[in-house]
Length: 86
Image (cartoon, rainbow, N blue to C red):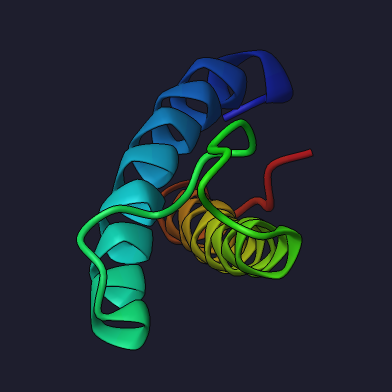
């Protein structure tokens, strides 16, 4: 499977990873903050610390999920084709 063939699958896996990361983030935020909704950057009732902490947590969760999905996809391609995707 060449790079051109792997690219569309990678895009779809990336979209799925973003969705999964969003679900995980909402659950983690609910448990850690005891609050149903994470603050948005324009929420005037929330302080800088809470907004930046939420953004950092969301970014970390997204990066970990995305890396796991990308790596899993590459390993799957190697198992199917015998070649690592470029």
